[in-house]
Length: 115
Figure 1 (cartoon, rainbow, N blue to C red):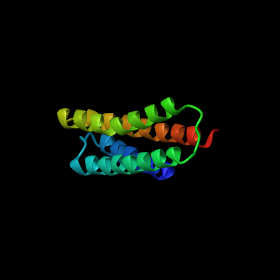
Figure 2: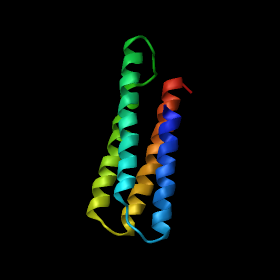
Figure 3: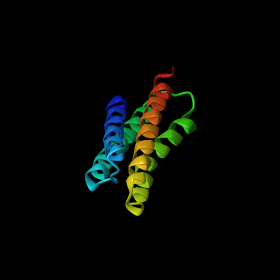
């Protein structure tokens, strides 16, 4: 699931880059796509909680859940800024949030597998 979430975030980053290069703001469809990624993240959080409750061990649970919470908040905050700022800079905000989300997903993966 982590790779799917990271790929979704990269796709949104690419979309935001295209809009940025055209000097266009974020559109509602992009925010819906980000919402889908966040919804999948929440499903992933539930599965992670179930697996941790049934015996999977990770080295640092506080950092692990901190990354999950940070990832869950990135797109909503970017969406609020995108709605407030109706210029090309909203595309920059979404681009940065998308890349940060993908990085958070990769970090979660390394914490999960213990690398």
